[in-house]
Structures are given as C-alpha cells and as structure tokens.
Picture 1 (cartoon, rainbow, N blue to C red):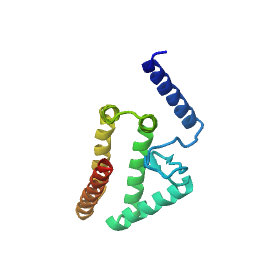
Picture 2: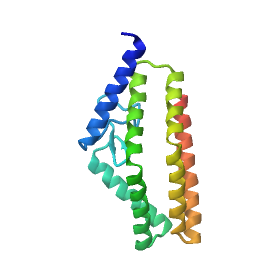
Picture 3: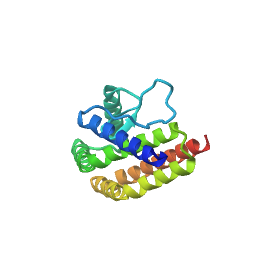
Picture 4: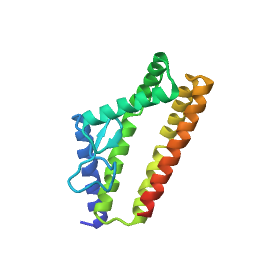
Length: 178
C-alpha cells in the first residue's frame, strides 16, 4: 500500500476513534501542552484543554468567572447575561470545537510520527482557514458581552482583553522558539 494511502487511512481511523470517544461523553485527547510530561494526559472539558481532572477544570472555570466578575464589578444580572451569551456560543459551536480537538490530536500524532515543520504549519493554516467563521462569531460574542457593561466596565474589559492577547502572543512566541 502506498505511504500516502496509509497516512490517509491512519488519519481516518484517528478521526473515527476521536469522534466515537466524544459521542460517548469521554474527554477527547488534547494538545493542551504538546510538551506534557511523559504519562501526563491532557483532557478536554467543555471546549478547552487542560491537564487536570474535570473537577479541577470546573473549579478553575468557576474561579476565573469569579475573578472576571470581581475585576469588572459585575452585578449578578450582568454575570447571568454574560454566562448565557457564552453558553449559547459554546452550544452553537460544539461541533466545531470537537472538530478542532480532533485536528489538534492529528497534529500531535503528526509530530510524534516525525512530520516536518512545513507539514505541521500547512495543517495549522488549514485549521485557521476552516475556523475563521468561528472567529467572527467570537468577536460578535465579545461585542455582545461589551454591550452588557457600563462604560467603565467596558474600558476594564478592553484592558483585560489586551492583556490576555499579549499573554498568548508571548506564549506563542515562546513555543515557537523551542
């Protein structure tokens, strides 16, 4: 069998296994930190990746929501509105999140199988193009969240977003330099 056909067959098998696991409500393997310590499994809970148990992730999300509420000085009503907006966004994009997790797993497998940086970069670019509609919807979500805020809260929110963006850019650059 030609090497390209074997690669396609392996990709198909990996996708079927990943989708089947998600259908059974088992956390899909993830790339949260592709440099996890040996034996450490990264889990995917609710659309994000982490190397913790579902309970730890749930506690961390609650902690982050509380921090967000405190830093912005949100009222209970604002917090509920924002929670509903985020929940609706996640539900609307559940299949995209699952597909993205499967593709990140494929990239991890490609790395483990010795794929070139060019092949991995091409796969990432394809993912970026494929999920550009979700990016537009995420920007819309941010606008909806911002609309629930007072002008002072909106300024703080914008500063928090800028800080978050800077953090991820630094992290991305650090990963590229390794």
